[in-house]
Length: 160
Image (cartoon, rainbow, N blue to C red; front, side, top):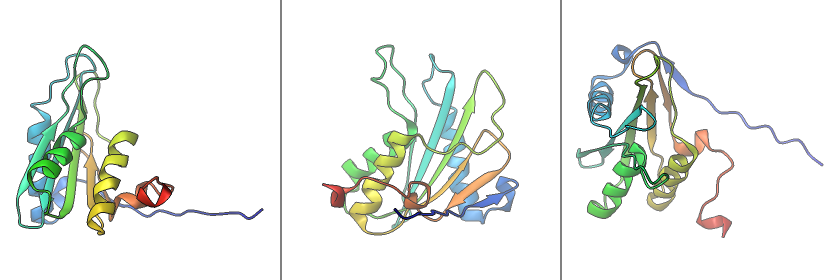
């Protein structure tokens, strides 16, 4: 038996104002699209903004459905749109903002497990890291240099 220790490192910003201007703009797009989320059941709204290598920004918000789990998270809405419409473009960054109609969300909220797996698929496909920024409705912002950083034990094409 051997002990395996995994260490991940994040940057935590006290507010959106501390980010570089371009990263603030990307997160602001996530915040704006979050407000368009269709979340009548969970009351939990998420917005995602993806920056492609050519400067294109693709956004998505969560879309719920009464026939749960037929809905789709914001991150997967956006990343699958990229895959369908920009299949040869690399994804550089993704910004995610989440809020609740029921309580204050001012701590960083990372993507769910299904979204992490989907983002990982594109990181693996393009053979380069996807930088991630995530936050609640306001307050601190977390930065991860790649998806693998937040999902060190992952399942990808090499697992099959």
